[in-house]
Length: 165
Image (tube, rainbow, N blue to C red; front, side, top):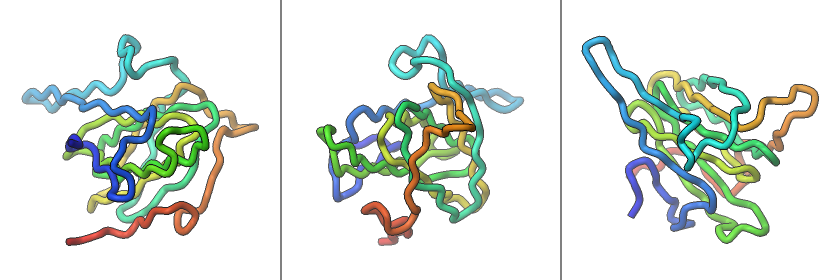
């Protein structure tokens, strides 16, 4: 059974190897709320600090595909909603060929940890702009980025179109 944070695509009924999720808790009061995303004492997720950044995505826009050789990503959507998609093309992986979808954002506060060498990208599925915070284990290296990119459409076995039914 999948959690609300996760939908495993019909093409692959298995969670991609080394991908982890954590449901996040909102702590509300009359002023608003607080949500912890990642802590240094969270031994299941935290390895080391690289950097933190926020990525804004406009409604309907797709930001995909890429993977990292060294970097591990920890994604949390803090505004709006995104469909985060992972594709495992690793030759030595027990889940090679698996595709996973995760619906993240204000309606489902969740952290998804994406291991290195797994292609990933997302689409903003909300009516408003989505804000995704990424806490990485490696800083971005401007002279030699740890990013290996493919085109968002037609390069991997995934269709970004919405499927109503």
